Structures are given as C-alpha cells and as structure tokens.
Length: 565
Image (cartoon, rainbow, N blue to C red):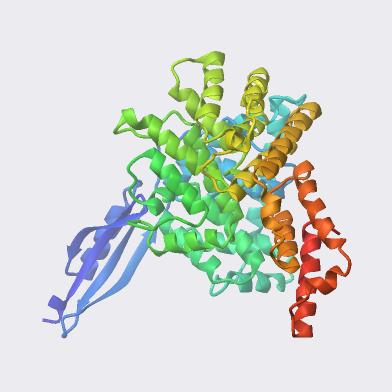
C-alpha cells in the first residue's frame, strides 16, 4: 500500500518549457525513461519528480533527477542579417558593453534561442564561447558582416577590420578560459554583496567581470527565458546598490532581446498594439493582464517606472523601432484598418518633450509610411515625408519631426524636400495655427517652446535656425499681447506678493524660450521689483516674522530659477 502512494512523473524540456512525458510507479523505470529521452541529441533536458500522496490527501512533490543541456542540432544555423552596427570597439571591455552585446544578440539570435543563452553568458563562459566558435561558420560570417558595416564609409578595408575583431574575440576567449576553473562563490543573496566579496579576493581579475562570470554560471542552466528574467529582476528589485543594478540592467537587456517580450506582453490583437504595449512597458506603464511571464512582468514594469533600467529600456525601444520600420502589417487580420493602426501608433510615440526617441522614432515612422505608400524609390520616400508631416497633430509637431528626420540617413537624402516643408510652418500666423487650438494656453505655449528647442538643437544651417527661432518667438509674443497673459497674471487688484509670485512662476515654468516673449514677461517683473520698498510690501500681511522671512527667501530662490540671477 505504501508503494501505491508514490508515483514518478517524467518531464521533458522543449523550447524552455517542461511538459509531462509519462507517469510510472517505480523509480528505476522513471530514471531509465529520463535517460532514454536524453539519448536523443535534440533533447534539451529531462527530469523526474517523485509525487508522494500523504494520508491527509495532500500531494508532496520532490525532484529526484534533472539534467539539462544545450540541444544538439546538426542542422545549419545562420546569422541574422543586420543593416547597422555601433562604432568600432577598440578593447575587449568595449566588446562586453551594451551596444556590442545588442549586436551579438541580433546576429546570433537563431543560435541563442536554441541554446537559451544571453550574450553575457556566452562571453563569460569559455565552454559556451568555444561551442559557438565550432558551430558551422557562424562567427566568421558575423565578423565579416560587422566589419563590412563598420568600414562602409571609412578608409579602412573590411578585411583588416575583421582581423581586429577576431583578435579581440581571441582575447575574450582567453580571459574566459583563465577563469573557467577558478573557484568563485555562488550567488546567494544580494548581487552587490557578491561584487563586494569578489573585490576582496585579491585576484588579478576585475570584480565586476568575475561577478558576471558567477552570474552567468547561475543563469546558464536555466533553459528558459522567463526563468532567467525572473531571476534577474528579483535580484535587481531587491538590491539597493545602484552599481549592482547597473550591472544587472545590461543582462536584463540581453534577455529582452529574446522572445520573452512576447511572454511579458501576452496576447496582442495586432503588431501595432504590441508595439504600443512595448512603449508602455518601457515607460513602466504597462497594464499587466494575461501574461506568460508571471511575477517577473510586474517587477520589470516597476523597475522601468523607477528609471532603474536605462540599458534595458534602450534595448526595448530599439526593438520597437525595428518593428515599426519593418514591412510587417500593423493589423494583419484587418488590412483596411492599417492606416488607423498607424495613426494610433504615431500618437503613442509623441511625448511632452518630443518623439519618444527623437530621430530614431522619426526615421522608423517614415520607413513604415514608405511601406504603406503605392510609390517606390525616391518618389515614394518623398511622398512618405510629406504624408507623415501632414498627418501629425499640428505644425509644431511637424517642425519637431523635420528637425529629427533631418539628422537621419533618410533626411540626408531629402534635404530639399525638408526645406520645402518648412515653408508650410512659416505660413502659420497665430499660435492656434502652429499648435492645437484645443490645448490649454499654458500647454500651447509649452508645445511651441518644445518646437523652438528642437530647432535650436537641429542640424539646420545657422540662418535657417535663426529664422525659425525668431518666427516662433514672434508668434509667442503676439499671443501674450493678444490674450493679455501678462496682464491677467499681474492683476492690480491682487496683493503685490501674489502678483510677483505668479509672474515669476510663469517665467520659471519653461513655457517660453529665451527671446522677445520671455523678455516681455521679465520686464513686467522688473517693474514690480523696482518699486520702492518692494520687500516690505511683499511681506505685508504676515504677522509672524519667521514666516515672512521664509516667504521672502523662497521668492528670491524662485527669482534665480526664473533667470534673474
């Protein structure tokens, strides 16, 4: 009867997920079944779980055997074609940096997905790096592609650049080999405690590097993207040390280069909706619904909201922009709604300070709009430029768009077309024509000021920048006069203190750029400040001297913030 209370569940791993293969009632049969599964070279892992039925009817599970590995697959694996690469890396440390790892993530995506490895694990494990180097022609193909991209517009030839990259790979491999047999502590507890402990070991290796080695050893047997993400997010959210979180951020970014993003977002009705959800996640505002990532989705969302993962955010945004720029339909099930889906996506990329990622966003949207048009070639790109400018909410957004797209490769090929669209901006005469008239006055002025900042940061010729800046400034000054904004803030019926504070707060709020409009507002403040006995009039009405001095001190601090020195 005791034997009847025990059963043995044999599970097999496929694509990072465990599923039950069979249930037997003898331990030796279960172990034999697991080893038979492992005899198949494509098997990623097998384990045996002993289920014990207690007298009270509850079941106790105990794992008695588990073996995981990189599935052997003799089929060819090819690199993923990429069309851009970062600036040249000069040292092994550069190659271990986030931009380089992002390229590795994209180039070796097919291999990494099969092996369930992140670039960090790959570069810090000699065994895994050697296995990659022995796999088909993956490494030579990748090196050749990166070398071609990095020497495309330079005097260096791709062959010599490729030799430089191979030498650095050899250095990275030799370093990983040196620490392969090193006895290092396990990752138990906070990651920052591990880094601190490694710093006191006295080894010649850098403690951050060794910490990455230990972390890689911890992650390498998790043949599951969700499991890796949960482990990393838990470490990050529980660690108060910014440097430790910074190190973890890079590895979380590695994981987000995989298919785990789909698990985090859960089911999405369309590609457009998925991209919008990716932007929401990057801002820490994703509404977690039905997700396959479990608690890690909640933790990741929280970390993004707290701005603790800048590298991971950049990785996620890069992925979103590549999806926007692709030719994949935004709404595959309802092609007639492709335009509506694009407009919804477009509006999500707009933030109070401009496009969510500036030039990168502008170029991705323009490429998408090119795919949606009927024309091809230069004519199609020109039509996309014009079309996107015109469907933006207002001319201020159009100007911000032109400033951003001018910095891109796309913009470099269409300078004349961009200049022609600037004429449409100069045709506006009032703030209500430049910015949405439905915006409140403060938001309207702020929006025009953001456009002004975009102009000043643009690559337009100095004379064009000056003309645009003065144009916006004049529109803002006219708006102040026509709407009597300053007069409403400086009502003579109000107490001097209230009038002065309101005017200074207005100047300090950043709703106006440096120029005629802001000078007009500052002149009104100076008129008040120059009144005889201003300080005495300002604190008039206070019965408590301490409170009076505090109010006066805070006002002078506000004056400094508003640019009055």
